[in-house]
Image (tube, rainbow, N blue to C red; front, top):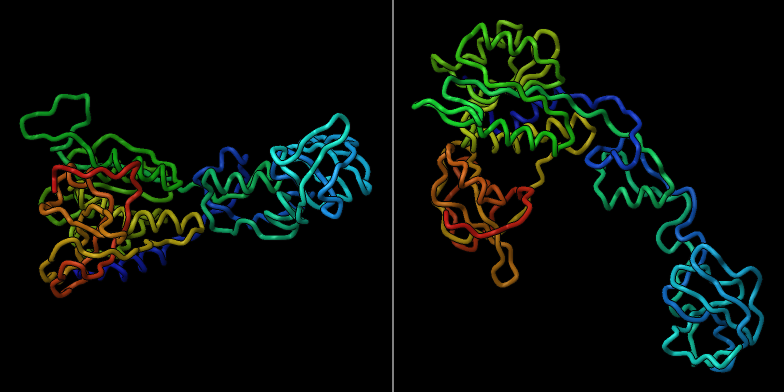
Amino acid sequence: MKLLAVDDARARMLAEISALAAEAAAIQSSIGRVLAEDVTAVRDQPPFAASAMDGWAVRSSDTPGTLRIVGESAAGHGYVGAVRPGEAVRIFTGAAVPAGCDAIVIQEDAAREGEAVVVPDTRSGNHLRPAGGDFMAGATLLTRGTRIDPWRLSLAAAAGRAELSVARRPRVALFSTGEEIVEAPATPGPFQIYDSGSRALEALITGWGAEAHRARPVRDSLEATIEALRGAEADLVVTVGGASVGDHDLVRAAAEALGLQMKVASVAVRPGKPTFFGVLGDGRRLLGLPGNPASALVCAELFLRPILNAYQGATPGPELRTAKAAQPLPANGPREHWMRAQLGYEDGVVVARPYRDQDSSLVSVFAASDALLRRAPNAPAVAEGDVVDVLPLARASSARSTLE
């Protein structure tokens, strides 16, 4: 098998992926979806000058002085009419500033005396939010290819959108192979282990905006593997295990029986060398991931996530950051090495500390990591403090582990 460099392998995979069609989605159900359109403001936000504080709307030229109170402006209920010299309007946060007023005196700085209010010297624009201060009509607020999160949803809602045009979710069929795999709560035999890789991948696929359909593990039978592949209705079929060339690794043979056109046969990466990718005879794409959990999850970050992004019209990635090595690292071998690591701060600088044991079967190490540290093929030794490339992982929190 020809080993492809990671970047070359990913490029070959992405060359076979086209963005899926767009569909309308209610704005509240668009979280995690990718925009298939630009979102443009149809009016200024705020559409009027608004008060930033509770207090009094005044003409700055009338201050300091005693002003006659002529009305009130509350959020959603503005003062109708213009304020004339010597007048003031009681105003509340978010309310429209009456015509003629150019400043707000906060209530703590004013003293009400019956139907009048005494105010200090006030500058024009004080505590006032100008019309269009957030965005102006015609401004592009969100661009095609942007993934919607709660903050971007808020911006789209502020633009008055009730629904958005988003890319269809890619359909991913996911299954693991191997006689050694059993799903909880079944009791494993003496030579079996629980399936952990495909469960993690299912969660990742869903979090990356796709629909995951996880099948039960497939036994080490060529016929069973062929039937599993044939029956998987999906844009992308992802297999876990059976990707190598051993006597019990049957995924490649089963895919070939279904007309596989191999695009990537193997990758010069550690972990994850057996990863492969191709197009089945009916046009479905197939990504074969290694069975070891760490290998599968590393290659999911390097290949599966970019594929799903490309299906949705988003920038494929991955997007690397830099950090300083927290410890010396030896020279690397001929394969690109992605080391599970913990990020931290030392003297205000991001540092990356890879775990000592990088065995690809260790789920506990991956669970404790919040980044992958990249070592280029044949990279020289790294000294403590040298700059390294890292791929941050989306984690709920970062806690130091006893596994270091």
